[in-house]
Image (cartoon, rainbow, N blue to C red; front, side, top):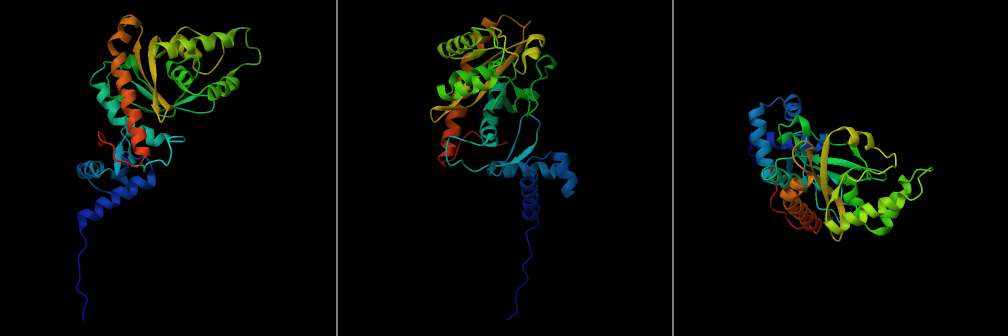
Length: 275
């Protein structure tokens, strides 16, 4: 009996080529896909949109790169930062339609916070351009870092402070830092002020960039997995007015991201995603 010749589905084949290329590159731009596969950019965009709707790829706000969808983490602790960014991205995009100022999403490292996503490219604001992905932020001198320090468990907080404490720390300076974190816990958000004397990374930038910022922790499973902030030029109104206007939206976004991370880590589908 002769085998019947069956033709492949060319459109499906090309779509799989796109998916495999995104998976191989981990993060790839539309132009890079165009160069690698030789497909028109309009065709690639349609394929990427389809793959995104099927939950196979997602687009990072920070630089427009396409990344493979990540499977659910087995546990909340140790959630991959790529997963947090993937989950958070659509919520940060939604936040950009409610608030006039950009945000970064940051995840903890041993002695700093690292930006893993930002909606800054959605704003045309040279005075408040944030990022890019990979920038290291201070635990002590940024609202982003202070929000995490205030929210994490006491043992983790003690370990981070011990790593950052200078050998010649001014007497009482650690008590001042802990007082700042206690105030942060009580009011529910972190700010850059008051300044602190320890010479940690970001201090000089914070002193001269003319910006203000507030941040809140993203909680999942009872522990912080990252923080999200808002940043605005100091000349654009008082801190109190900006915070009063936008704090609730920032807190709601953080809660939504935390819930989505927790749900996905349990292996359940999460709504609100897509490209």
